[in-house]
Length: 92
Length: 488
Image (cartoon, rainbow over all chains, first blue to last red; front, side):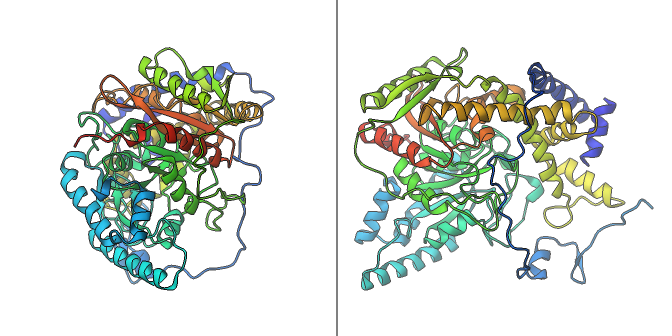
């Protein structure tokens, strides 16, 4: 249970005790299922890091015209002086 | 009814001047309005802008006619877009409360290319929240119903798109497929659904779920229609570094009925106990039809298939837990106020994410956390290599593999709601294609005793969607399962 609480904290999810218990049960069932992967010997197998080699056609590092600030800010009522408005970063 | 026409039929009628794009668009909008109370396939209907786009298409059409210019078959044809793809000025919720009210200031590349071909964006279709699910029951805005039996799910996560295409309210719709989300709903609703090769269609503007798995695909009445839409979406995009420089597939398919020279593999791992007997029966019958058209069938093995489910349910949630970190209540979507910044993050996310999304974020966070990374995520990435190698070996022998799309036909709404693992098992035959990055196509091959559609899946070599589409098209020349429509 402490572990589930820790995971929820890492994921920034505020959950009730009841919710934590619900996820604890379900996650443990899912983790039991995925444990079957441990049967496979993969010592000489490389992890798949890209779907196709030749991945990543990076574009030239040149700036492009950005979206106008009023459009970027258009999706929140929490703004001031052309910036997003947030509560204090640290607890008072 | 003109909404009964397939995309290519409607395109020829439109170009012959039998009706205008406005009339076609208006007919779709009217049919949506009359069926939405039963189906709930849409989250947003862009009535006004659709009619404006239709008028612009009509203008282009008459102009092109006057000058004798060639016309795109997509010109003036309405299209529905799954609500995980951004369309500028059109709300995009991803089926989630955490994006309620969000209006993207940009358009996904795949959609933009279709708009440039003068398709009409008619609205956004329902989806499981952030495309996580196999039934659309995880949408925060209510479940979509299967037009063949409204007490059943349409599949998911592109369930709204599948339901809308099956119900003949729209000729084609975009979907996305991370673990089967185009193919499985296509199967459940009796339509044709293409998941292209990873890197074939740009993901720019597709709200990220599992970035190494996500593909933008298309649902349509038949393979020829799917090919017409897909051929315009495909291709390299500077805004998605994983799109590849590969030859484009042709727009038009061959209307012959000859499959001589095509080799089809039947993977024994996909015909297992627990699969609904009618599904196996219909799929085997469809394989017999392909054989009668000249295709050669061989048994093949994809030995790591049984590991696809555990691999997927580590990799996809791990990627999701990182991708969904951006939803924090600061720049878009609702915000739950708190005493300090972390408090806002935790309260907003804890309240606004639904159950399945929360579960996957938790699972992914766990799989990536210190002390567990190697055992879970690292091991999953290695087994993913083995799954990809299985396909590479099989495609040295055959052009495509044929198998069921899902173990069952559409299940009743609520059937799996208390058991996430049972729901995950619905994806057991579709996950491997995403893990290996290969293309997959689902198309209707019959009905079960309850009158529910059965789909068959073809998976193919990377960037050879053309082979799959051609095989399905040839099959559809000699069968009419794809022409059956639900009574509504």
